Image 1 (cartoon, rainbow over the protein chains, first blue to last red):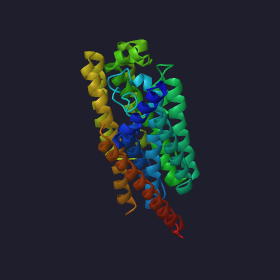
Image 2 (tube, each protein chain N blue to C red):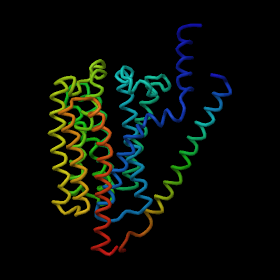
Image 3 (cartoon, chains in turn orange, cyan):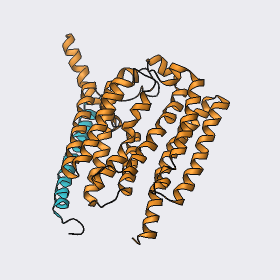
Length: 308
Length: 42
């Protein structure tokens, strides 16, 4: 058998071995679920109304756009993914999907999601979605991630935009309140990912990714996590200050914030990976609950004062 | 991988693509209906 035949056969088995679950995994479903959820809250809080079918289409576009950019990210980062135990079993490094297939899958999903958003919802939401995808792919994945320890600080903007997109889909504009939601997620991202990076520092170092613990060390990272946590928790009161939310949210945010800061303090004092892991896990729940509180508080306020 | 297993996988994938396309057609139809319906307050 010639070399070209061998290549053709192995390439064929690559594609044939791919199951639907592998294509689904390319979409980074866990990231997608948080993105969709924050997008929903952005839509709930926005002034105005949107036909349920169009609202569904908007959420589908946010989900598919996030998934498409996730697939492109996995295509670009396949060399890094192959070196880390957490990502080694992803479809591309595991050899179940060809890199080119993943790339075209991601590109088509991204283009399709933006086109559908423009046709079904409005141009502003489509432009914001396109900007989010481009920022995640070109600025974070291709540029910042391998260049600077500030990668997830700046790159976090992409993950923070979905509630703004949701807001724009309903209201047709970008309001101050949607920017507050953006900043909450933007401030949340660094302590969340740095807690993970503390636990996986050796793997990031081996893969050549300049995460903060790799560049400045664990002690400085713990200090950064603490101060970012203080900044995040302080900023979560902004929705109350601007009148977006009321007492229910304020009390909930204070309690959740107290737990977040306590875990950040424990990371500094105990210097253990177990504490970092705990903060990482809690931070996901924290963001979820903060957005649940925003939605619940808004709906209870609406029903009390608007009688709806 | 056995041939029948490959065929089964290809069948599942083709079915998923067909369902996805059918879903898109239905979605476009519903979006058209939603766009044609009068906005609240009109």
